[in-house]
Image (cartoon, rainbow, N blue to C red; front, side, top):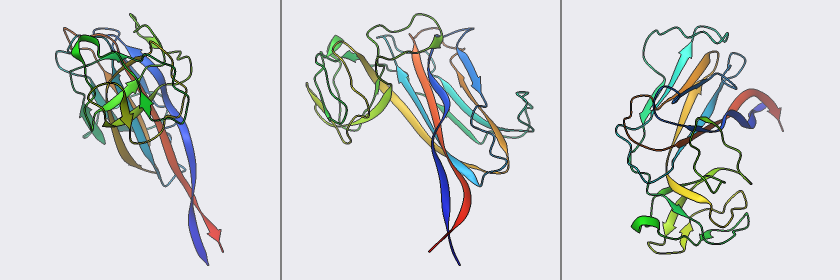
Length: 218
């Protein structure tokens, strides 16, 4: 008998959320991270920068296994994954509507910002960077795309956009990480922007694709 993996895709762990440095700059979630009945999952983590001010230290991103899924943290051992973001926002604004499925984005080069090949760009989906921590409500959707070419406008991405994007929308540099989480365990994900003295809003989000079971295939 042949078997194959059965997956659940696009499970939201952290919906797009704005963090402001300081005491409100920490968000923690266990949503979608109860993998006790799973073989494991690929956790996809994204972070985008807003504004024009460099961060002092960067944002810490931590994934830890927990002893249970009741929302209580128990700090034992090392993190399953620990990352620190960059500090340069390098933001710009789009200057034209772009339909979903396209790969060319005209931008204004704000403050001399350019788009270099290999840069990851975070599309905020809004025209104003949030000034307080909280959920982001994009006009269409937040996403991260990689620049293929285009130091000057427009920049071209190596894959098409999932969402429509609109004139005057904020776009900034991004970080993203993939992490395999073994199953039969529960986890927590933390974004910590608490120790920076400078920097404007950052956007954070995460999804997971879970390996649920093996099924019979012909």
